[in-house]
Length: 405
Image (cartoon, rainbow, N blue to C red; front, side, top):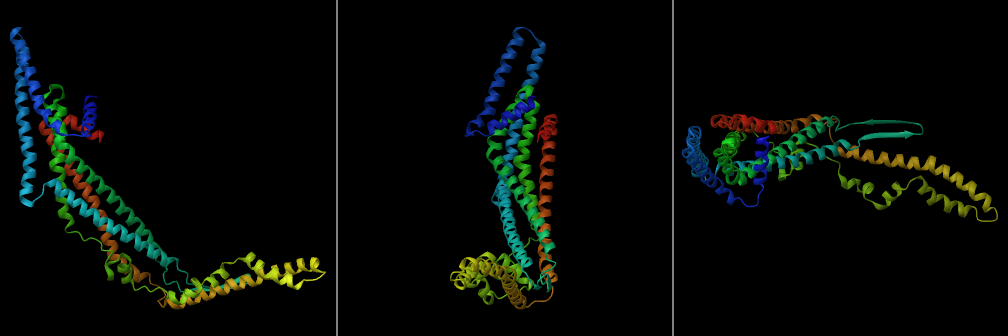
């Protein structure tokens, strides 16, 4: 359980508010171990203990090796960042962070565009172009179905949007890990790992921590810089293709789709008097017409007998004859105007598919390249960490860390 306690200690220290004090951990550990070895050497010479003297000599060589290792590690990590800064003006970590920010922005633009395109296609599918003539218990109808066959595209868009959202979550997680490693690993975790390397019973754990630090500080950002080159040869989807730079106005504009002239339909859709009459249900019409008509018709001594009979007759006429005919007539007028004003071919599914095909192919490539990024970055980082750990002698603890992760 020592490796688990060690890892929990590292996590707790990594969340501390200030990291400056942790830079003194390694020098303090060197001084403490040197003093302890000096005391043990004095005891070995005083009590003539050759075994203890040999142990002190071995640990002294390990102390020197630990100091040299610390110098090499710091020179490698700092030198790698300095070299990258000299060549391109930024460290590898800063380059990786910039790359992730640009990729996330592209994914968000594609995500918003796909949502708007899906909403537009849904509205097209939902538009009613079916003409029906009801006649009591039977009816006749036909439909031109200009947007038939678009529904499967909505399923493909939904799956693609889910893939884009998963990639955004993955990139945001990697960006958070990269920012965390930049702020914590170099000033906190690496000094602790070097200090653990000096203590005999935590030496292997220290080697594993050093290997993790090198992997996170050097191999991890450089693997991201490597996959950045892959993104430069992969075409990104462009939901803003077309006039106006708008996602819907771009892709949808290339489909050749024409919606009804809404100015002509305003009489049915926005006129308050027509809407109030159509929205008035059967009971509303009964109250509006039957009560005044029967009241005026039955004025006199026979009102108590006349009004119920009149109201029943009026109720049956309104509910079963007048209102169904008015509703059917309004529907026929609306559908006839809508169908006439569309002015399109019988099916636009092929036109829309041709317009969406190239865009969806680029979206598919975009989703797949995200998964490839995760595989390459994870492979390079894990293999690098295990290789460095094996070279330093902390392979057993590295396997424990890997199993925990």
